[in-house]
Length: 66
Image (cartoon, rainbow, N blue to C red; front, side, top):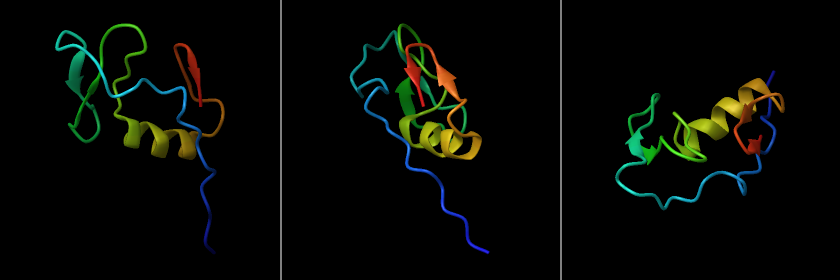
């Protein structure tokens, strides 16, 4: 039985523009992302979308609700 993951809205996810002080590696795939500072996330945009699809709408991030 095939399952389809819900579409995740990423418009509130931090834009891929940050300073070197905010840069870090995604904890899942090691891609460069905004890891520190306001709106930072330990996951890159792609990994966050797949995790949010897995866990559903209860996944939250400071100032962003997946």
